[in-house]
Amino acid sequence: MLEGLRRGLRKFLDKITTVELTPKKLQPLLEELKLTLLENDVAFDVAEAICADLMAELTGQRVPRRSDRRELVREALRKAILRVLTPAEPPDLLKLVEARRAEGEPFSVLFVGFNGTGKTTTIAKIAKLLRDKGLKVVLACSDTFRAGAIEQLEEHGHRLGIRVLRHRYGADPAAVAYDAIAHARARGLDVVLIDTAGRVQTDRNLMAELAKIKRVAEPDLTVLVLDALAGNDVAIQARLFHEGVGVDAIVLTKVDADVRGGAALSAAYTIRRPIMFIGVGQGYDDLRPFDPEEFADKMLRAD
Image 1 (cartoon, rainbow, N blue to C red):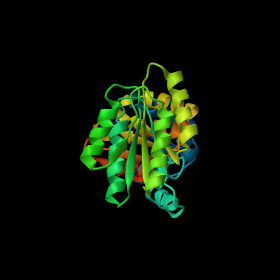
Image 2: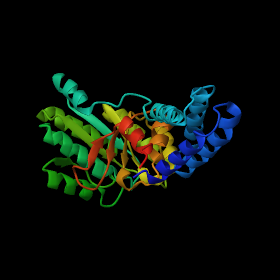
Image 3: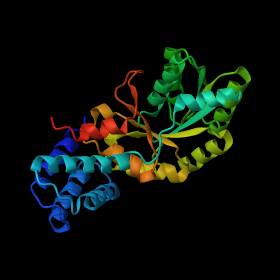
Image 4: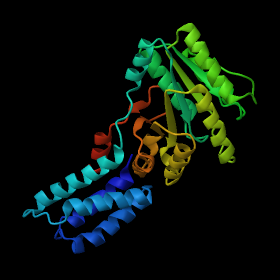
């Protein structure tokens, strides 16, 4: 994980610790760093922001010893990465659910994202996490478009012992979400997790459909699921969904297979929304809360 980005950042640190920290000397090295970031799936505006941060932080710094200079530059780079990765505090899902429970209402989460990102599997992982905390969960299949979508979610529900609410294929997705929340309210359930369609070929119609679901269901949280292996498309997808629907937080999947590492930087910075979880495998327990400091440290690790 992150091997490509780590190698590039290490090379940058090796070079920059040998030069005087002036704008004239820093500029060519920062241009090289920008190319390294772009080659590792970091979006252009994100790469620019990191380099601008470094220029401002390092210009005029006076450090006599090379070893001290390396640590100074490394810490400046770490701060720049953290500023990109932490546009806001990630939502604490369990605390939010408990707050709604105190009001006697179910907590609802709308999941959006293109097909193939691991959205349905992510929903199942979060369902298990909540179930293991003693919460009563119901899944809603508002993807009434893709063949097999209902059966896929039902299979997850069967394995986890969690009920799935569904309508027929072609039914109104917003009605499914609304009925699931009403069902949870009537039966005293704690959480409703809503799966949605993610077809790529009709972006405008998809966004209109998702906006209607959100308007009707009024979810407490809207989560965008993105694939870490999608490269620069991550930034494009994040912007598309945020502008079309409005996103509160991000789940980044397939992080364990991502050798470049730029997707996390691009996703968080592009829409200024926090990454809540990362997927690190196909098992139901392969979900981790995202730790920006740990992520930044892995990027800058020497070995």
